[in-house]
Amino acid sequence: MRKLPGLILTLTIFLTVLLVTKTSCRLFQPTAHFFIFNESQDKKAVDINIRLGGQTVFSDTIKYTNVRPDLQYTPSKTLSKGKYTIFVTADSGKVHVQQPIMLDGDRFIFVTYSYKAPADSATLIRNLGFPFADKLKGQEPKIGIYITDKKPVHM
Image (tube, rainbow, N blue to C red; front, side, top):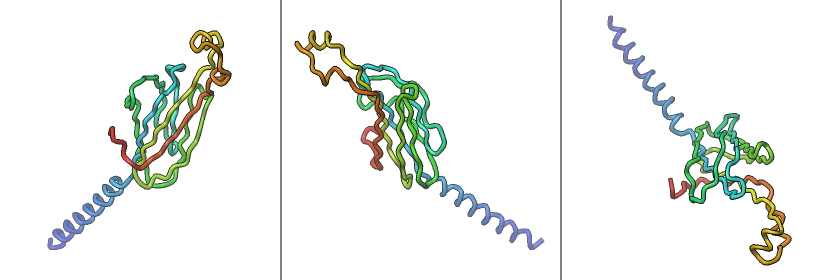
């Protein structure tokens, strides 16, 4: 019977160490916070898919708003420390980009979609008086990724 209190103490210490180890590992896992923006006034809604570490972070349609910062699309993903790649696809696969990222602490990732439709010359003549060749071209769909370890002021 004397071995029972020693066994209980040993088991209690083991479970405590196990619990502390498991909890502390989770506490030190970095989080990737995403802020997703559609900056295109010409394409008011665009589908976007974001993957990180083989996991989908976001897959939905984002809409243009003139509110800055637009905080309606702010998913996050907690992963183990390490090197990963962010994959972003938008506009039904017309544009895609990938960016390596080192998660050794929390990261704040801004993903922007932009597109400017080509203007017709009649609109330019009416609005500006004469056409500008560079204004006629517009801008191809583009994705930008900006990564920082500094927490944004609006969080």
